[in-house]
Length: 375
Image 1: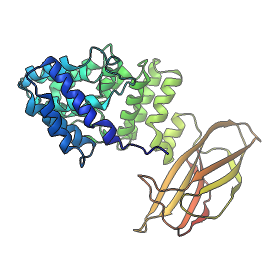
Image 2 (image 1 turned 45 degrees about the vertical axis):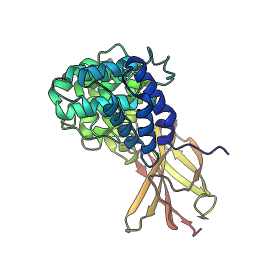
Image 3 (image 1 turned 180 degrees about the vertical axis):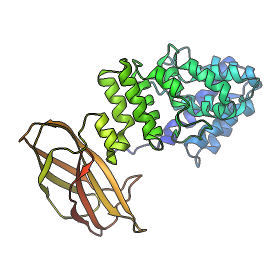
Image 4 (image 1 turned 60 degrees about the vertical axis):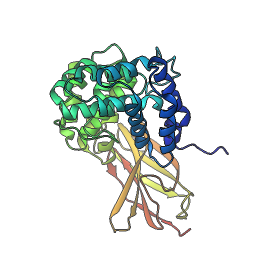
């Protein structure tokens, strides 16, 4: 079996640092590509991904013979003519070019360079998504940067339009918080929610999902406003709404279910829930079957909830999607699932009593117990 290479090592490694140096030197002969690469590569092994990006941009800062607007010019000219020519096959881009936008955020984040720096990020995001870098400008120059961001929302390149939504998310993972009202970027989302690119609309959905953690009322009101406006229709709007409301659906929020057309009190009974085994060990499979019975026509979203007790005695509940369907009166729905019980980055499996609960449109039925045994 081929051993999986950690992301940090695949993203920023000796080969890529060397390539960065050569691309810079090709447009700036005074740049010492060999010394840059030696110094940066020597420091990489213990560093996590973001630290590798920062170390590489620090190396650029040390060895570039120019700074400010001139450095921006060098970085931009060093980029291949097109993302395709650079070997980029996804909208997200290559981590190879992540130090470039990091450099802009660290060393060109000044009022004098503001316009040229933001323009540079709009170009660089085609090579590697630049939302993390853009957030530092929002933090330091919120009014001026947001004016630029609004312009990005109308850009002909979908990767720049996505940057407008992604850079202004309230809680972007692995990035700094920004000093804006939670709905400050709503004018941006108003422009982007009917965008033809899924890369863009997924960002819009994630942006709304961030807002939903604190203000679900804003999200539901926004979705309703878009729906009433007549421009947001069809499967893409349904995708945005489902993704934006996904955590509210997991927690059984009545308003979220009803917005999507699921009755909050589904006309459903659960005659049976059968576990293949009631005792298992971590890494083994919890297989179950269930039969739902409908007493009236209804649109249904079925999930299941696995609960356990943490070391501190609190309850941890993990909700997993199972099926989206519609039922007619008198119809029996037979469901089955094989769920592997294993520790993940967000959930540690410990021996003890666990429960399995079926959830339909947010309504939870009686739990069924099972035991996770000692290894």
